[in-house]
Structures are given as structure tokens and as C-alpha cells.
Image 1 (cartoon, helix red, strand yellow):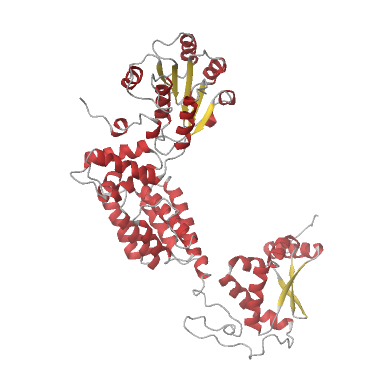
Image 2: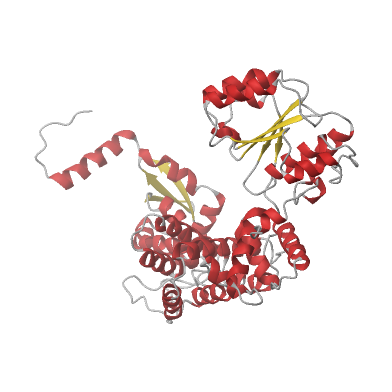
Length: 518
């Protein structure tokens, strides 16, 4: 006899064997026990989550001669005939290849005939969303008032394509993606029963790769069993799937944390030489940094995430190497790079650029505590025009004065050092700088610097007044001027703004203006 694939060998035969869908199995079992069986069911959900298997179990259970607690006994003549696929009363229809109105008309003609041997005639229509609109319309009346001996079970991965008139005639059950830990546990059970030697880390990689589909997990395991000679390891899985193992990702993340560009480029070279899928690696790297962000935000907790066990300690250690802003920046850049890879004719270059950009110095990193020595009360910036070199202590511009004592300061003094204020704010928080730079100091009054904004920069003025932005500016003002100062915005009159606009136009295009129109 030819080999039977694992997912077919281990297809569930009872509701209790369906993995990860307890809420649906319990409902269907209770319906059978209490004889509350309706004429039409709709099973929806991702691929490989048990829709068709549950439909077959349902068809068997409603026709079982000796049901046990809503389950089929799998021992009576009816169950054995259905299990062997010989029952004439269980009709499976593939809607993808039987999608026209003629097929549905044929179904309507046959549906009125009584079952041959079973209590119910069950129609299982898989991928029902593939039916044409005419076929759906032809099916409506039969779904609404079917013969008492007929049950329809419709299955689909795309319920949004099914007309509402059909949805309203069915009991709808949503199958969810199977949990990572449930898949690992089921794979362990299968390996134990079939005496297969597979490392647990390899099973965890398969479960992660399957993305909630049990059929995908079993198909991948089957593929790895055909490839491996002896025990299946993590390296076996990586080779078969064209992915990289966990140690590779750990090493490249470590190199990114240390900004070791040589190591990063060497690892990517090895990736290419081994023939790994660059796009798949980019996807895996984005997912890894996404998990690092979650670990960082959850206070080093990993128990809430579907991660292989061996990743927990690694992620706790590596998340501590990055600040939150830097992690956000890396994840954002790598996500953009993954999108670009889909359309790139040079995937290696695109990957290298995205990793280099993600690793390099960025504004978020400059705002990290401890990274930016910044300005603090009581310290002054270097003198205007002086050398801006690292390692040199700041030189005071003005003599120290007691903080909080307002000895008065002129508008000229404010304007002389204003560029320094803007630069300091820009280094610490670029968004605040964007709000501040559009205002021009026009007056100093009672410790307030009045900033004049053009009429179309009203939003900038309002954002600068926000407590977080305003407090940062006040902190910088104290450091630069050695006086406690604050800022207050003011909008220029409309006419003045217009004159400014005219002046800008004249600067750009010269004075040969014939006419100005409102």
C-alpha cells in the first residue's frame, strides 16, 4: 500500500480529537445529545484548523447507531462505512470545481431523495465561497426549506465572499488559528506514537512556521522526515524550510546591538552562500524584533507570548541591549525593508541597506537617556562660533547667577543665543524643535519670550504650549541664558503675514512685479 501522509493518517475521528477548537466541539456534541440538529451549518476559519474534519465527524455522529455523549462510536456499521468513504449518503462537493448553476441544479434534484442507509443525507460543500452568484441564488430556497432528512455543512476560508442571504440561513462557527503550544503538544504525541526521533526545538520551529495550521505543521514534519537520516534537529528544519536557525538570528541581532557592521555583512554573505531565502529571513528578523519590543514593554516577561522555550532567556537578554526608542526605530525600518523586498530585483542589497539603516544612529537614539548629555540647569552651552568637538567640557557663556532670580535680559541677548537654543532643542526632541523654530522672538516681558508665528502656523504655536514641549524649552532657556524664562506664542496679523509672503516672492523672483492680486 502506498504511503499515507501524516495529516491524513492523523485526521481526527472524534470531536475530542480536534485540536484547539473546544468551543465548537462542545457545541456540536451538545446539539447531537439534545437532538437540536439544524439543517445548515457554516464552518469558517483559516486553512488547516479542522473545518472539513469537523464536518465529517458531524456527518458521522448524526448517523451513528450508538452515539456516546454526542460522539460517534466508530464501531457500528454506519460509522465504519463512513470512515471507509463508501457511504452514499455523505456527499462531499468541491465548490472550486463544481461552482456553476448546473451543478447546484443537479444537487437540488437529488436532495429530495431519501437516504440509502443512514438517518441523514449530509452534503459537505468545501470552499463554498467559490460558487457563482447564480449558484448561490439557486441554493437559497433549498437551504431555507430543505427536506427533513438533509443537512448542509458549508466550509470556507473566506466568509466575507458569501452572500448575507446564505449566511442568515446557517449556524455559523468560527474556527480559530490553533495555538502554538497546542500544535507542539500534538506533534509530540504523533512523534511518540510513531516512534519518530525529533528534537523538541525542531518541533517548536515547525509549530511557529505553521502559523496556526495543524495540516501545515504535519505536512512540514512529513517533509523533514523524508529529508532527515536519523533524528530531526533544528538544523534539519532550517535546511528543509530554507530558513535560518535561532543561533543565526541571535548573532545578527547581537551585531546590530553592538553596531558591528563587519559581522553583520559577514553573516549576510553566509546567508546568501548557503542559498537561504532572503525574503523569509527578513520576515523572521522583523518578527524577532517585534517580539523583542513586546518583551521590553512587558518588563522582561515572555510567558505571555507564543515563543519557543529556548527563546525566552535569549530575548530577555537581548531586549536589554536596546532602548525602547531604538527598538521602535529598528522595527519600523526593517518592516519597510520587508515591504520593499517584495518588489526588489536586488533583494540582497535591499536587505543590507535596511539593516544598516536600522542599526545606524537615529533621532530616537539621540534622545535616549544617557546618550545625549544635553543641557542641564546650571550648565551653559559653548560660546557661539566655538568648536563643537566631543569630549570638551561646556564653556559658560554667561556668569553663573542664582537659579530663579530674574535680573532681566534684553531681546538682543535672546536673539544672539537663539540659534543655540534651537539646536539644543533639536538634539533632544526634534518634534518640539519643529514647533519652536517657526516662532521668532519679538519681545521679552516679565520673564516671557514672546514668539511671533505666521497666521498659517497656529497649530505649531498650540503644540508648543503643551506641557511636555514647554517644559523642555524652559529647561534649555535656563541652561543657555541662566535665567528662568518661559515662552508665549502670538499670531501675526493677517496683513503682516501677507507682506511676508510678498517679500519671500520678491526675494525668489526679483522685483519685476507687475501686479499683486488678492
